[in-house]
Every structure is written in structure tokens, then in C-alpha cells.
Amino acid sequence: MSGQLAIGIDIGGTKVAGGAVDASGTVLARSRRDTPDRSKSPEVVENTIVEVVDELVETVRSDGLGEVVAVGIGAAGFVAADRATVVFAPHLSWRHEPLREALARRVQVPITVDNDANAAAWAEWKFGAARGETHLMIVNLGTGIGGGTVIDGQVQRGRYGIAGEFGHMQVVPNGLRCECGNKGCWEQYASGNALVREARALIAAGSPVAEDLLSGVGGDPSKLTGPLITAAAQSGDPTAIELLAEIGEWLGVGIANLAAAFDPGTFVIGGGVSAAGPLLLDPAREMFRRQLTGRGYRPEAKIVAAELGNEAGLIGAADLARLGQ
Image (cartoon, rainbow, N blue to C red; front, side, top):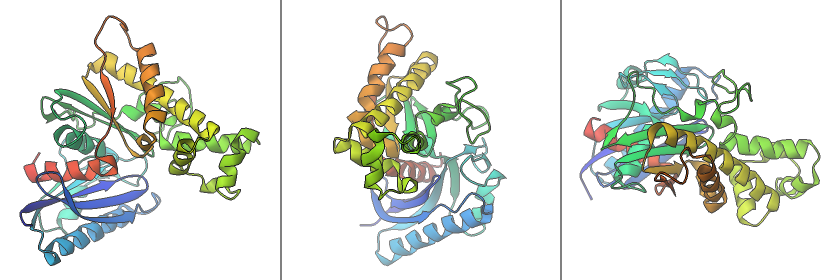
């Protein structure tokens, strides 16, 4: 197999994932590193990105897969309209970081930088769950909440490039403190971090309903993760099911607000927490219908699971880079 490939890099709060992607959205080679601690300098994160890119370029060359013509970076943060600068990343050390310039000195093909959820929205619109949809919004539940919008085949980035930060809408006045600096942000109630926090709070309170979850991590609540809670729920653990339902209800509240403002045809729910499937989405759909303004008198957006999984961001970042968008 040969052809023009692009490398997509998805940078989240916990991982730097990369893939060499062809024009059909197929990932032909993969690489992954842990995201450096956010106390580290921006250069450390950039070094990690370059390591992933170099590994993928070598794999493409040695396996005869084709030619790498571009690199697309999908970053979990606010990316300026210049598509080169990460203005602010709550889970990373970037503050007005000239990321494209820093990487261009070390990567020999054109580079584009975008928000990771914008990239995922593009991938799901072009290759995944929202093909043919004219008005798409994606909500990615991971460490926090990312969001992106595609209207009539165009990613909507906003005047300053920072559209789609849905996770930082305030849903609880004076609520829980968020890493962005504000209180009551949506991602404090409907994200992977929120799921783990609530499970650990039950354990810290000595609640007997959390005994099975605690036993599942050998008595060490610090080892509890979102995937472990999801797996427990899928195995029938009632407390894990209840915790996911609570996250789903908060998800429904937020997307009802988004529907009131933007009236999309489809919401795609992605990110790691979406692996819970109906355990998350059914409570979200029910709460969405209860909270939707004009309910009963207006069309309702579809709420569907992402099809491309955790690779949506890197697939979209690669395709946008190849197309120069």
C-alpha cells in the first residue's frame, strides 16, 4: 500500500497518541506516549510529540506505506485563530505557546494545530457517526469535556479560534472549582474526572455500597479509574451503574443547553467515558428530553455514540492537515 499519508497527534491530559492516516481515514501505524506531567516545561511535551512523529515516520518508511506529507496536532486546549498557538491548556503547561513554530524547527513537513475536539468532530463527520449530517456537535468526555462543531462541512472555530469549549460552560453557580479557574463548569459534573471523583468520595465516606469497587482495586482507591468503573458497571455493579447514570444525567443537561443555543441535528458523544454506551447515553437522552426547551413542540437532535473511538482526534487532525484546513 502506498500514497500520501498524514500523521495525526492527539494530545490529551493523560496520553499523546499518534497515527499515520490515509485519505480514507484508516490508521496504518500507531504510536503512543504518556503525557508529561503539566508541571514540566512546554519543551518536554514538544519532545514527546517529536518522538511520536519520528517513530511514525520511520514506521511508514520502513514498511513502505507511502509518503508523510503533513502533521496535524489536536491539542486539548484553546488554540488561537492562527492555528499555530495554544493559548491555554488547563491540563497541560502551555500558556500562549507557539507550538507550530516550536515543532516546525524539528519536523520536516507542514504542521497544523487545532483543538482536539475540532479534529474529532471533523473525523466523525467525514468518516464516522455523523456522515451526511449538516449540523453536527461533538461532545468528548475524557479527563474533561471537549467540544466541536461542523456546519455544512466546515469546522466552526469562532472569531478567535476558541469556540467549542463546552466543558467550561457554567452549569452550577458557585459550584465545584475547575482547573480553568472558574467554578461550576460542566466538566466538573460530566467527565471522566467527575466519575472517578464521585466514586472515591463514596469510598472516603465509608459507604458500604462502594465496597465492591474498593475490593476491585485491592483496597487502594488511588487505583480507581474511569475504565475500571465502566467495566464494573458493564458487569452489573449497581453502584458503578448509578455513578455512570449520574454522569449521563449531567451530560443530558449540558447538551439540552447546547441544543437551545445551536439547534444541531446530531450530537456525537465521544471520548473515553463514552465506552459505557447505553449506561451513559440512555440517562443522557432521558435528561435531554426533560430539559430541552420547547420539548414536545420541536424536532429533537439525535444523540449517538462516536464510531471512531479514541482515535477520532488523531484521524481528524491528520485529515485536516492533509487538506490544509
